[in-house]
Length: 358
View 1 (cartoon, rainbow, N blue to C red):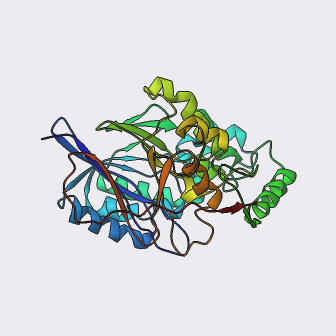
View 2 (cartoon, rainbow, N blue to C red):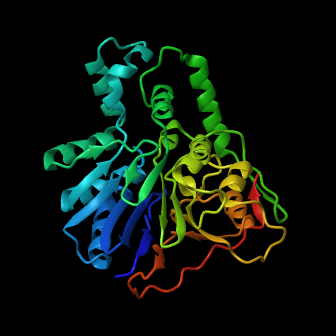
C-alpha cells in the first residue's frame, strides 16, 4: 500500500454558497476518512451518497469537523452523524464556556441561563451536540495546536475564540458594548454590499477595510502535509484567523509561503483576505500573467450566488501563481500520491477576471 490523499470539494448548489468537504487519505497502510462541514440540510444526503460511492461505503468515519455554526457549513453534518459510526466530532461550542464568560455579559448572573442563551444562538452546533450525545460520539475542542488525524488546527486560539463569542452580534449584549458599536457594525454590513466593478491591470488589487463576521472568524483552520503536499483548509476564517495561522506556522512545522492546496476562505469573500496576508501564505505576486502555476486553490461557491467568489479574490490568488477552481455546478477532486483511479474528467480553472470590485 502506498500513501495518498484525495480531497473532494462538493458542489453545494443553492442560492447561497456552502461548504462540504470529504477527505480520504492513507498513511503507513492505514486509511482514514475526514469530513469537514456538510453544507445545508439538503446537502447532507449528497455527502453521504458521495462517501458511499467513492470511499467504498464505509461503516466508520474517523473525524468529522464542524468549522463553525453557519447553516451552510454545519447543518448537513447531521446526516453524516446519523449515518456512520463516527470516531470523533470536532467543534467549538460557546455554551461550554458559559461559567467562564458569565462576568462578561451584563444581563446574566446565572451560568445556566447564559448557557441556554448561547445554545439557542448557536443552534446548528447545538443540534450536532444533541446527535453526538445520543449516539455516543465523543466531542473534542479544535483549538490551535489540536491534532485531528493527519491535520493540525492552526486557528483559532482559545482566547480569541472566547473574545469572538463575547463580541458577536449573535450573543447577548456584553458588558462593554453599547448601541453605538452595534450601529457601526450595521453600517459596516451595508458598506460591504456596495461594490461596483472596475477594469484593472494585472497585479492591481483592492480589498476594503471592513472585516468579516465574528462567526466566520470562529472557523477552524486545518493544515496537513500529505504525500509531499502542504494542504490548508480555512472554512470561513477572516484576516484575524489568517494572522494566527501565520504566527503559529513555525510551531506547526510549516514554512510559509508555499501552500500547495489552498481553500480560499468564505467562498472567495474579499473581507476575509488581504494582499499582505496572501503574500505571506501563498507568496508574492508574479511579475506577469501567464507564468507557470505554483499551486491549486479551491473556492466553494454556488453558481446561483452572485456575490461569491469576488473577482478581486480570484485575481489575487492568480497573481500569486494559483490555479483557481470553483464548485459552481460541479464537485472538484484534488489528490496526491497513489490515489485510487476515478472517472472524473479534468477540472477547468477559472479565467483571470479583467475587472474587480471597487
